[in-house]
Length: 219
Image (cartoon, rainbow, N blue to C red; front, side):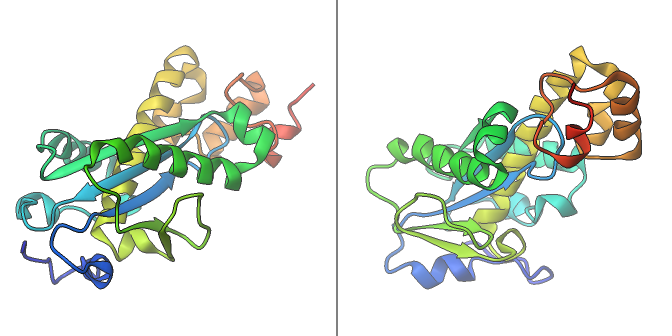
């Protein structure tokens, strides 16, 4: 069994509480971008082989909000090179148009469900449980919600890194067409520079029109 970093509160304790044998599959799911004013909400779904996962990567995994963009990218690159018998992940992005149609909570839950369904066919048997960050459950059976799960579970934390990296990458691509909004710096959140750009240039087709700071610029 891989060693656990004792400095952080994060561990495999929640995963182990559901495992009855070493080959039980425990997944982690998290999302990124709920608070953004623009772009998609993105969810990641991850599986970690606790017996084989490299400790030098594990000790860097944490809640994505606690990790710098550069370090998140570095961790993500390392995760992406791991073989399928050690680590697997998928992600899904739900567009701003869908967010406006069904609301951000439902869009987040949909992204989680979609990411889970993308990962599921890569296993030979069904997962024992899927651990979901937060207190709202997507349509995944069986699943278990964990408040602040990205600070408690390695599986959820890894999913949070995947979701955050992919959300930022997608927003950076959008930003190439709209450099005046500085999405590469504000990542779509309602920073002073972003709000000033909205005041000056109006909204883009990627802005979430049901969000209060954006609504007033709809003509």
